[in-house]
Image (tube, rainbow, N blue to C red; front, side, top):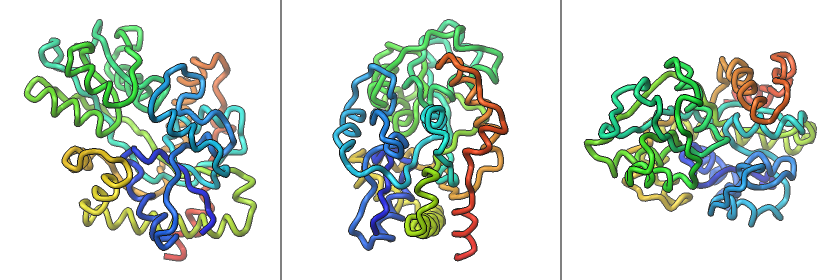
Amino acid sequence: MDLQVYGMRNVMEQATTHIAVDAMSGGKSSVHHGNVAHLVGADASMNSASTINTPEARAIAAEAALPLADVATNYDTQFLRFSVKRPDMRILFTVTRGLYHMVARRSAGIASFKDLRGKRVGTYTRTSSHYHLYKALEANGLSESDVEIVALAPIFEISKAIIDKRVDAISIWEPGSQAARDGLGADAIELKTPSSHYFNLNTTVEKLADPGKRRQMVELTRHIIRASKLVKEKPQIGCAWLEKASGFDRGLIDRSFHYHDYCASIAPDQLDVMVAQDKWIAQEQGRTPRSREVLSTLLDYSVYHEAVVGL
């Protein structure tokens, strides 16, 4: 296997990709720590325009000299950021659907989303967790200006901030939220609102046009689909892989594993999510949102369809 696969090794959404790469390579390859930036040789930090200097960002930058990725996993939030300048990027299918939620402190007077007005909310800005905060507020008649957003990183610093009462609520991916719930105990309240966030497998037009790379993408996709079925039947296998790859406490992983849908499928509302999310990103970037027609060109499900036929 010479397919270069990149993804954040310390995110739980990556479980099935770890299993698939190991199976496809016969244990000789693993997922490189990185993200969609490695598809196009961009700044290798998660928040390329951010000044936040985190262990995660430094670890990714350390691998920036590795060969460019052939495929990379990431939430659609980061894909949309990078694809503005690189419209040759493509989403292949959804690996995992993150079941986002928020954690708040009861002692801060929070019993529902409405109570977030005027509160301090910690999040990893410019990421899918920040977008979830935006959507959750919007769904409950609030806006970002109704709360004080506190930019924090990495994820366990966000957990620590709410435990230490430096913020009143947090929006962050797992296992950061679970760590906060564990630390707060009975003071924790979970706030849920329907929203879609997709952790996808991505590539570029150039890589898709390479017959050898494409064949391997199809094979990788089949392995991810098989791995997704496996971890749904035996979650402990996915948890064991995450413990190995991330170094997180196994109990923490076990307690937060159910907040992920390892779906390995085409999300029916992916384009709708992209249209809505691009409007939010465009405001921050000071540009005009891309049209639905333009965003639709960033989707290429042909590899997935080919992979399914072969199963």
